[in-house]
Image (cartoon, rainbow, N blue to C red; front, side):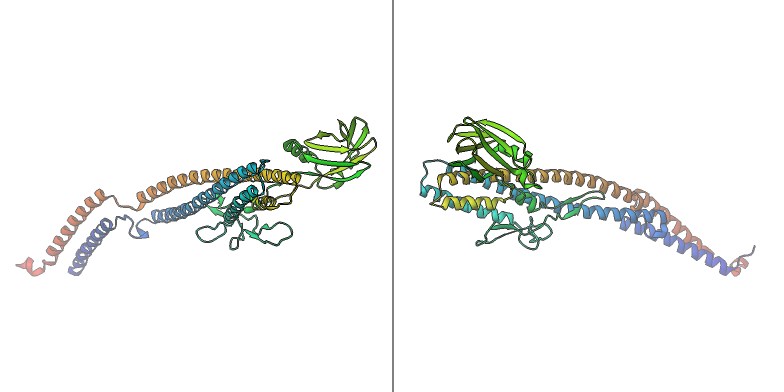
Length: 408
């Protein structure tokens, strides 16, 4: 087959240009460190690189979320730890306030510190995150979690948030709440369970107090009926000169009998009764509805009792009992919340470590596909340089030939 001079020239210059392109690709690979310069170099590999890059970017976002979560948990742990210290100090003051030798001035001195602790805890209940959100307000994080109204008829420290939990995703399968709601931590805390005499018949006098709180609490929790109020009423009947019978009014069931001496105290299920009466007389009492009270309200009530110069000894003792039960229940609630935070922190740390392992694995897989092997690339560079030089030399010889050279 005859090849014209033009064809020979075109083939030679095309060979030179192709070798120049190949050499340029190798040089670009070495300068960028990338083996895949364009999708057409390896369509399958390029698709894998895109997928791996997306996964790596997603993991990076998860790790940022994890850091936010960790910071939030640690901040809340610190806040609740400080609140715990304050409550424990308040508890010490309550025990001190029960000392019978204290006078009005001593009580006022204790009340000053109780008031300071109350205010510090109230501030902590309205703590804000670094971006200004109220930590314990739930979804209502743009406004304070708790409000204070000095002239309120009932509770003066009121929860204004909700039970919403702001979840944040830290992996493909894990989302964790960044906060605990103030409803759970502070508001859902029961005040001291109690009973109250509601009516008497025939007796000269009757009084009651809780003498063994834990025993009474157990009885109350087992027997309180939120649906049928009559089932919460009990009647003490003096059935003999030395015996009383206790009957549930709603069900008619006799729940106990106790030895009795008129005017002397007797005990039943953690309650102490003192009744002065005769056979046939009755006293009715009711299990009080369980009430919830946050720690700020508990401390405020105790503060007011300390400042009340006209409070009776019985009411003062009752105030101390109420306060101690309130702070103990608050300490339990806060300890549960701190434990929950610790569990979430452990999960977050475990997920973070797994994400790092996955990130390393994905980056290694991506590098194997797209990153250049420098030793191989340098060898390829030498080969392409030699090929280009050969093509250039061939081109020079070919373009130097003509029929006149042959004739001569």
